[in-house]
Length: 317
Image (cartoon, rainbow, N blue to C red; front, side):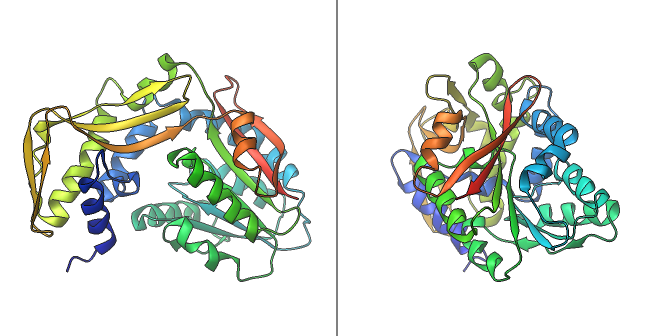
């Protein structure tokens, strides 16, 4: 049996559906992590620089909004930590202002956790770092054993990869773990026009194409599949009225793909697509709708200079 039974099951279930679907969670093997680093450096990918501008220029105001008692140690838990380039600004400001805290980065990718741990240990040798590997839905319960005050970071528009129903459940689960007046810092992309959003998922250099196709490479490598990448194309979509960018891998021809680990074949019609990712864009009304049943409320909002991106402070009532 394969070492990644959950991935294999999800591939089987997703390719057996109509329409076909594979979760974007599985983009992030070592190669996928490296390609995503290149995506964040693309001129079209405004999301990273927009939020980086917020963190680099407004960290003191963000920390003020946490209402933390300097005399009491707290835990800063970052879900989907990534490479830490934005978070380091917040950490530096906390350290410079003599706050007492532990930093707990959480990520499904072991490679990402190694990268962020190395970065933070080099930048802040005295910082206490407790990395946790796993899907944040699954590890949330284990993160709240201590009685220390907590601030949760969920930035980078990671919430946007969830359907609204799932996002609402996720926010409700976080709320259930927080005590009254504890905070969630939530970074989300804001609704904008197609000419700004779509190039971020369909860049001129083809890096986002390679990122999506790497998912098929990973299935080939780990499960003995015979996806011919030349027979698939990256096909993203976005409409401003819906506010959701969607990524697909579309079959260019009628074909059959065999997955050895499953001993099973999957048929594709010409132009049939595998849905791989959503990236929801937000505004205040959408976010208020998602937290309506969660006891979380918006208590602060930080914007970049172009109003492309927002970091919201959500406080448990």
